[in-house]
Length: 460
Ligand code: ADP
Image (cartoon, rainbow, N blue to C red; front, side, top):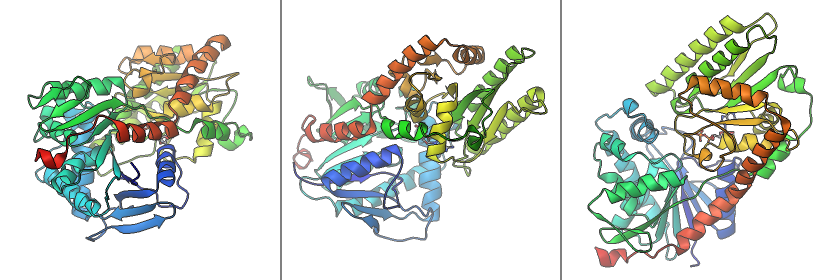
C-alpha cells in the first residue's frame, strides 16, 4: 500500500515545530509517509467559512475546517463535551442533552467528511482521533470512500448500560462498524467495546476475532498510548536552583498536574491530603501538595462547579493547617512550561493521580520518566486510570476511598529506597514499552494489515 496517511483530530498544531507527545508522534508519522492532517481551526467559533484552510505545510500538509459559533457551542461544547465526555467517563448524571446537539454533531461530521472525501486518494489510509469524530467513517462510507479508516478513542469506552443515555443508543455500534480498526487505550476498554457488539443483534463474531456488522468487518484492539520518555527525562534532569522552582527542599513535596476536569478526582485528592495533614498534626513534619490545574471548558457548567468546589476545599484546608511560614496546598490555575513541569516532577517525593475515570493518564507516565532511578519518587495511581492496567507496581488506590489515598501518601513519603527503586524500575519499563512513537507506528501498521474488510461498494 503506497498511499498517503490522512489524520483527523480536533486539535491540530499551528507552529512549524509541534510540541507535545501525541502531536509529535503524529507529526513524525506524517513526515515519514507524507500526507495530510485535518482538524478544527484554532480560532474557535470563527465566522462561517466553507472549505479547508491551509495552516502549514512542509513534508505534509495541515488543513483546518471552520466551526461557526453555533457549531462550536452545539458540536464541541455540546454533544462532544456535555454528552460524550461525561458518558465515557461514567458521569451519566452530568450528561446534558439538548435538542440540536446531536443534530449539529452529525452535521459537522458530515461536512468534514465531504471536505475530506476530496482529499482521499486510492490507497490512502485515514486515521481518525477521538470522540469528536465517531460518525466520520460512516459519513465517508456514504460518500463511497473505500479507503482503510482507523479510529482511536483516547478516552474510556463507555460501559454498555451508559450508552442508553444517548439520544440514539444504537448509533455507537453503527458508527464504529464503519471503521476497519478501532483502537482503544486498554484491554478493559476493548472488552467493553466487544461487549457492546456482543449485545447487538446486528453484530456477529468471526473466527479471526473481528466483528462482522451488517456487511462490514471491524477489528477492535488496544494500543496503550505513551509519552516521549527520553526527552521528558532529559528535561527533568536539567540542574538548576530549587528556588527557581519555588520549592523549599526541607518539605516533602507531593505533586498533582491535571486539567481542571471532574474526571480527575481533585476534590477527593484534596480531602485525602487533608486527612494526611491531620495524621501528621503535631509531629513537626511538613509536606506540601503542589497542584497545577489550569481550568478548561469553563463555559460548561460542570467545569465551573468543580472549580468552585476545589477552591472551597483548598481554602478550608489551608485555613486549618497553614502556619505563618507554610501553606500546605499550593494550587496553581495555570499551565506550566513542560521543562519546568519535568523538573518539578523530579523533585516531588510523590505524585497523586486520582482520576475517577481516565483513558490512560499521561501525567502518570511523565512522573515516572522524570525520576532519578537511583532515588525515585513514588507514583500514587488510581485504579481507574488506564495507566493502572500495566503500571501495577505504582501504589494503586481507590480514589473514592479517602482513607486509603491518605494512607498511600504517608506510605509513599516514607517508603524505603529499595522498594522505591524496585517499583520505579517496573513502572519505567512500562513507560518505555509504550513509547508514543511506537504507539503511532503500531496503530498505522495494524490499520494497513488488519483483517480485510468486505468491499463496501459490493456490500451496498
Ligand atoms: P488529559 O488528556 O485528560 O488532559 P493526560 O494526563 O492524559 O490527561 O494528559 C495531559 C497532558 O497535559 C500531559 O502531557 C500533561 O503534562 C499536560 N498538562 C496537564 N496539566 C498541565 C499544566 N498545568 N501545565 C502544563 N501541562 C499540563
